[in-house]
Image 1 (cartoon, rainbow, N blue to C red):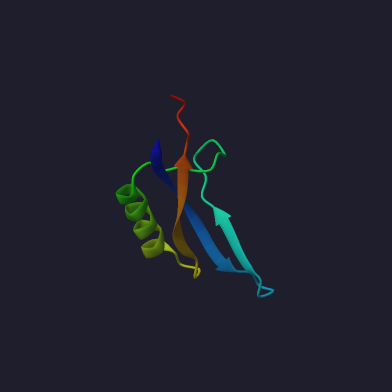
Image 2 (tube, rainbow, N blue to C red):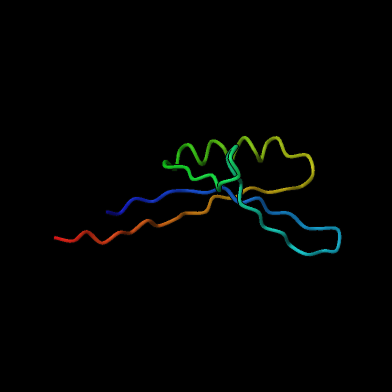
Length: 70
């Protein structure tokens, strides 16, 4: 089974100059996993358009390769 999923990563620089990367979570404190690229791109676009503190959002591709026993 070759099915990719997608996560959104928030990137910003702290006051000390350190780059910070945070995965976006769902409403239950679990990392948000999106099943289609189009939905991930749409959400990333919304987040990037509405950020007011210089954050940048990026898509991370998660390759879900599972070996199927025959």
